[in-house]
Image (cartoon, one colour):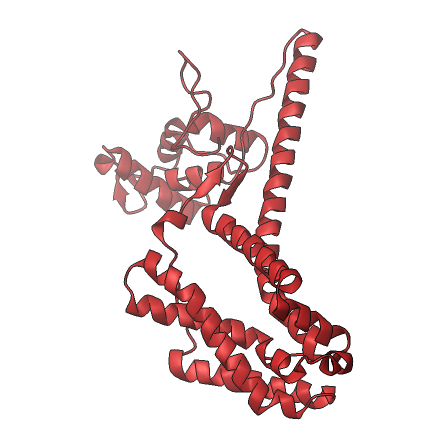
Amino acid sequence: DGTSGSVMLMSGATPELDQTAAYQMLVDAGFAAETISSDKRNESLIEFAENGRIGDIPLSTLNTEEARDTAYDWLVLNRGLPPRVADDEMRSAIAAHVFYGVYDHPSPDVTSAASDVLAGINNKVMVYKLMDLALDGLSLASIYFLAAIGLAITFGVMRVINMAHGEFIMMGAYTGYVIQLIVPSYTISIMLAIPAAFGVTFLAGVLMERLVIRHLYKRPLETLLATFGISIALQQIAKNIFGTQARPLTSPSWLDGAFVVNDVLAISNIRIAIFCLGLLFLGLMLYVMTRTRFGLETRAVTQNPAMAASMGINPDRINMLT
């Protein structure tokens, strides 16, 4: 498999390819320098020995492999002989290449059947990969859906493009972070954080509508600039309070892990929870908008504020609550 530390084994046989054989394949293919065997090294030492010495090294000291390697290295530096290939260099060269075997069988029927099976496996893997990507995209779309619900309702009812909508989402996230600092249990903290985040952002939205937005109705450019300024202000306030580093919001242990279908297809539990939460809020929004008086009044103000006001609906109240 290209590494000397984990060679592939065949049942009842020696390793398919050892380090020496693998490196020799690289040499034969021109991908690596030729190794200097012990015999070649010794022949070079004998050839360049003069007066019982090789350079400053007496021949009498060359009684170990290490000493002979040192003497040969001297010849490399001073006589221009090809350098030795160290084991580390050999392993690095092997690891940088891929070794594989080609399955060949004398019967074309067997090879054709094997090719068909392999093609079927590859097709199944591709289908599962596409399903995995689709599920990831669906869970990510759920996050964007949760963020877009409020923006769509705000624009539909008040005709205001809220440039601070992202900062309101940030406020909800920091609310969860603060609650998690106070409540050590991740399960209890997330149960408290969800309604608390809605409450904090609702109050902030009401405050912004009462103090700023209601004075700028039917002036889209001014509302755009005003909400943009509020966005910058909220960002700076968050930086001053929490700093510029990312703050962790840890999910409960029961949301760890993933739902694994096979080795290719898996979706994390947290993404499943987000998708289910998105469906829950979608159903809740549809129920409120179609089955409650508040939803009826909201749709009336969205379609025709003047006519809704003539029917006894208070558009200012609807604008404030949405």
